[in-house]
Image 1 (cartoon, rainbow, N blue to C red):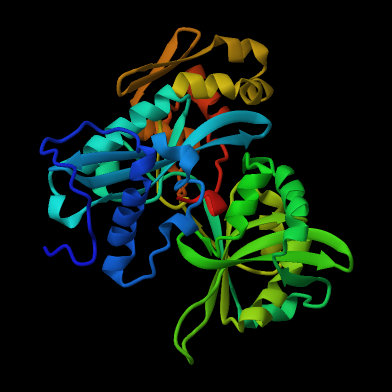
Image 2 (cartoon, rainbow, N blue to C red; image 1 turned 120 degrees about the vertical axis):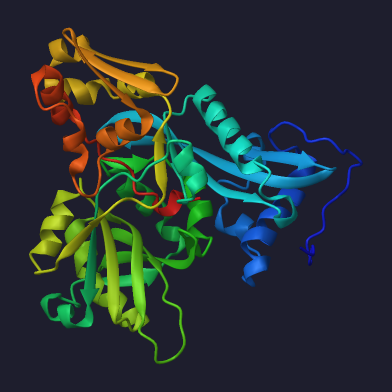
Length: 397
């Protein structure tokens, strides 16, 4: 395959290097590679570094994992490390994205090497869960699976008659509302930890979850009530215009009241809302409008990297569900690709795929069928799993 407009610096080295982090002087070459593979080859504008500022950053060079071959930078895997909160407990996840190999060097196992390297690095960095933005067999072979349960509501123009479009107003994001956005997001029970600077960078990208997007803030008079990230509909004139809300936060009733404003702003025929199963308040409000939802997994694939450490960090959550005595009796072990959970002499053994779906749930609720039906261990697992999990939203890579 011709190299087209992609130019690679030849360093005169003709032996493959082991996967490693990016050096400062290699940053621009990484950007050239990912933009070539994901943007130029599809005639899309080169903007990976703009759309994913938390990943492509001078402070994240060690997590931009690369391979050199024949003196060329030929393969890349990016990791964005984040802390998340689940009902007051902290743990760490690693978002994996921008995984690519130059077309002339594919089918040599470079991406597999980078994925193995990346998972080892994440475990060393204290990350418990990997979240991959893709569904390639490469990830499935490594033990990544679909998880989570999200209610996807589709709202049509005909549904608007049951929405009040006069209660609130929406406006494009302005930096004067930055602290308000941070404050409402901090109230979410399941969320990413984002610094003020992280928010500032993310909110000005003009993109969310690999699509052009706009951040709208929701107001009633002078009162700030929340925000929505909307993937702005694209298409030719006369085509159906469909928008998608890929993140929201704030007063749920106000977010619902803003739906009519969003329809008017983009002249939509349909709007999709993705609501995680733990947001029972918003699911109830939307269901009261006679809206029907479909159950789906969160985007991408997930793998639990370190079960004992994850469960230790979620200790207070488990104690609230089971009580201290049972929590102290519950043991989690991991040996290579095999996992075990035991309590009072009973033991449940499983592999990483089954374990990940039990712990984080499935959209069809069949995780319960994977759990033993008899004995204390089965009851305990049903009581504490599935855990709620973050929707990728503005942290998508």
